[in-house]
Length: 220
Ligand SMILES: O=C(O)C(=O)C[C@H](O)[C@H](O)COP(=O)(O)O
Image (cartoon, rainbow, N blue to C red; front, side, top):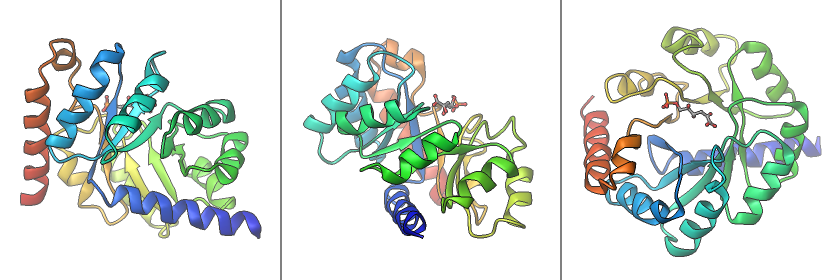
């Protein structure tokens, strides 16, 4: 029962974070000098939650640097696939963690962690593993490849207490259709952070993309 209480806290914390922005930008930092200008560009564009992936060695440092310099940002870590990584991102200052999938080990570590975990699922069985431990908020990954909007509509039937952050294949054209679903709390993706814009240090373009995406979501 103690686990369920803690898992309820995870749900509440994830809800509070996701209420800050309908878009969860998925960020990959190759060079630490990109971290602050990129995070600032997103904040200027109206997006205050960030998923910094651990796909690169720079991920952990980037989390640390952004947390120290930009207190208005809510900094999360992505690609957290095991308890060791979860501990490392919490130590680096991450305020939440996201995983593309789940394991029993990671789910248990997420319940004990000082930061909330948003585990990833692509199937009902994975969702049921998480739900058994009290999790009610999941990343739906890879969203488009795993069935997209029809899959989310189908999951709403048996799992009507669950909310998702679909990620993978979301873009400016389909984000509002995902967000219109009652079981979608926010959408994740890299479309507001194009790799060529980062490479060219075109921070203005990133800010404009964020503003445009938010504007489009508000209008629909
Ligand atoms: O790196 C991770 O931890 C992931 O879970 C994968 C990312 O969230 C998706 O690859 C983003 O998908 P796109 O928006 O289609 O680029």
